[in-house]
Amino acid sequence: MRYGEKSLFQEEINARDMFTSIELLRDCKITQTDPLIFSFFYKFYELCHDNNKVNGTFKKIRKYPITFLASLEHLHYINYGLGNRRANDIEKLYQDIAKELFNSNDVDSFRTALNELYKNLKKLRDDRETFVNNFTKKLYYRINDTIHKLILYTFDKLERSVNNTTFEKIYSPKAPNDVSQDHWADQNDTKDDEYEVIRNSIINHTNEYLEENSLNKIDNIGNLLPVGHRLNSDLANRKKVFPKSPHSKFKYLEAQAPEYLLQKKFLETYSLKNDEEGNEIHKENFKTWGPEDIDKRAEDLANEIYDVIEKTPINT
Image 1 (cartoon, rainbow, N blue to C red):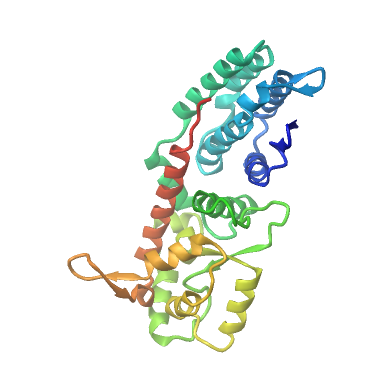
Image 2 (image 1 turned 90 degrees about the horizontal axis):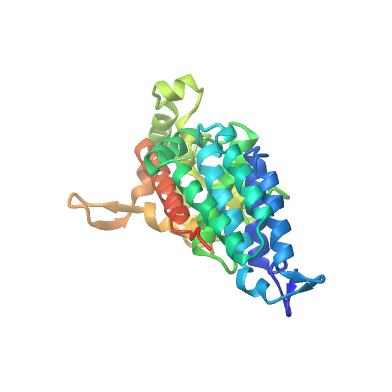
C-alpha cells in the first residue's frame, strides 16, 4: 500500500512492529482477533482508495494499523500470554467493534469505533500488581515453547523501547533459535569455588510455588540475558578455559561491544554495589549474584515493560 514514494508496510520499522504484533497474537494462541483484524484492514483499504488508487486519506491515517495491532498485542501479552484470563471474555467486544469498523462510512466513524475499542482494552488490561506477579512467577527458561517465545518477546519489546534504529530482532518466530537465553548464574559448575556456594543457594532456593510447579530459581527470567550467535559462541569457547561465574562473564563482556542496548543496561545497572547508605560505590555486585538479585531483576523487568506499554498511545 503506497502513498507517494512511501509504503507503510515496506518501511522497515513499521513492518517489523506490525509483524511482531501479529506473531505475538499467534504465539498466545489467540483467534478471537481474526474477524476484527479483517474488518479493520478491509475498511482501512477502502477508506484510503478511490478506484484502486491511493487517496489523501491514507496520509491522515497511515499510522492507524500500527496503533491498532499494538493495542491487541499489549492486551493479549498481559492478560492471556502471562495472565489467567479466558479469551472468550473479549469475544463480544471484538464482534461488536468488528461490525462497527466494517460498516464505517467515513474516517470519523472509523476513528470512533477504534477509540471505543482502545478505551475498553485499557479497562480490561490487568493492573500492574497482577501483571508483575504473573510475570515473575511464569517466565522460566524452557518450560514450554510459548513461554520461551514470551521471554524473547519481553526482551525484544524492551530493546525496541530504547533502540529503534540499529536494532536486531530478539523475538523472531521466523528464526526462533537465533537468540539464546543465557543463564547469568550458570546452570553448571562455574569453576569458581567461592561463587559455587552462591550458585548452589540459587539452585536449592525453594518455596511452595516453585515446588508445586517443579521450577528452579536459576531458570527465572531475572537470571536470563539474551545473546546472539556470535556472543553465545564466544562465551561458550571462553567457558572451556575460564571460570563462568557472573563476575567473570561481566569482566569479559564489559570490554565487548554489546549486541543489544539491553545487555549494556543490564551490565551497568546490576554490577554496581551499594554502601550502607545506599550510595553506588564500585562494580562488585556480580560476585554475589544470588536469589534476591534474580527476584529484583525480574520485578524490574516486569515494571519496565509495563511502563513501556502504559506509555504507548492508544487513541487515534
